[in-house]
Length: 350
Picture 1 (cartoon, helix red, strand yellow):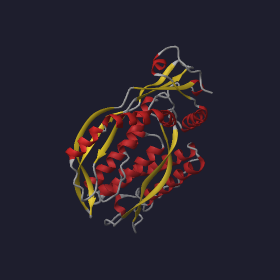
Picture 2 (cartoon, rainbow, N blue to C red):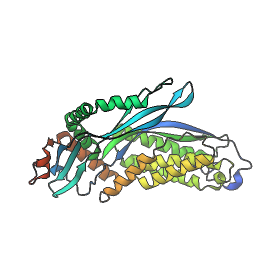
Picture 3 (cartoon, one colour):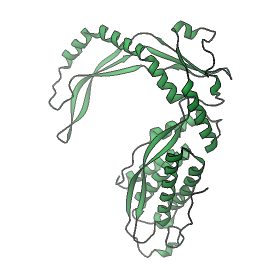
Picture 4 (cartoon, rainbow, N blue to C red):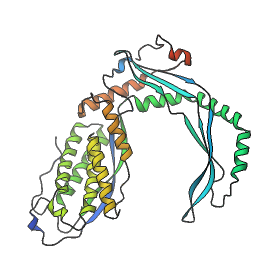
């Protein structure tokens, strides 16, 4: 079922250029909407068979100091930004090595250490702070060995929880909440009828995903909204307006969110960049939350799983298989020696 209403050809954005005798004022209204998106993990799901997935990990090494350096930290004091001098301590924690193995295909889907850098700020961060950086460093170095041992102990004690969290976040396609801003247009002329029609279509589709955990029908509706919004981006009536860049920034931002939900990350990324560029050129009058890094991460992760069909049915099937796997996934800790030794220590997960 396609959530696409009849096009408004009379008085809408598709009407002839001569329909407008003068430029009509327009208000652009942003509305926060809640949707769900499917996100890919930071590892390849190509030929993934969850019936044979096992997870094993080991912890090795000690905590060590990297550097102690002064840093100016911005803080807000009575409405004005000022800077406070503090010391930034960077250090390394024991490494947590993880291996995700697919015994059906006899391949390692993930086999590396998690990031193990830590940071600590020394000194007060208040408006009247006057930190003595020399004294702070001397005092910290006097306790450094015991402090590093304590950090290592905490890391080892919490290693399994970190690995379990990694499994939850990085081995399956999973639904994630998305609070995104979509824009409507208010004009007495009805000039933006089809643009607002697209907004209504997308809103219904986003709600359908939220309520039903389904994709096929909502994505079909989202494609209808995308079609209308993209027609608006090239419409001569909009392009000839004095506020064209602001209007097109809002429409581009709508398109970015729609393509994101529809799992076309390349188009989502391109429209997100375009929206922010047009908004900057028009004086940054619109509040556009920056999701560029999150979208580009999905673009990268999707390329890692390029053999997975890009269809709603395939995505939902993969998500459900992964969700079921997570319920039974076994995480086993090995010594560093056993982790690097053959044969492998685990049988296939249930």
